[in-house]
Length: 120
Image 1 (cartoon, helix red, strand yellow):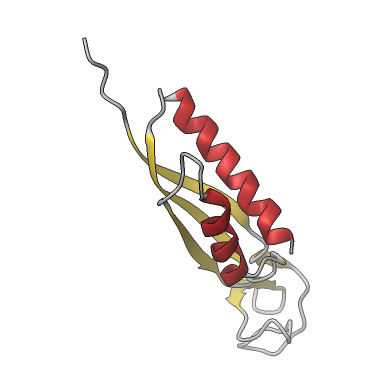
Image 2: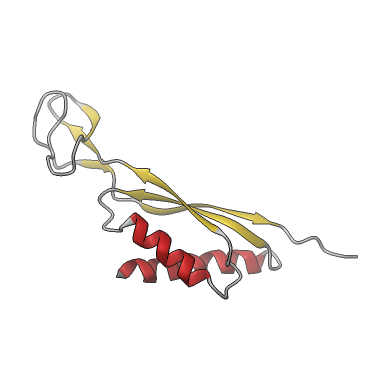
């Protein structure tokens, strides 16, 4: 289950950012996850929850935005969202396409943190 290693990498990156801000509290980590990324969303959510136990991210949320597969249709000369990842053909004209525009993402897009106030 490679989702656990992905979750650990996310936690390490978010922890480093929080530490660079003086130990800020991380409330949420936001990801974009493409349908063709090879990552199982539910497994990643579970892995994140387990892997954050005992870390500075314990209690934080992993928020995942699903990214559908979008292809470029050379016949229509337009980007088209696939109805199914089983058929890589334009949903409008039916032309086959392997030109994937979106849908492979595994991208960290934001970290919600609360800055720690310095006491003077």
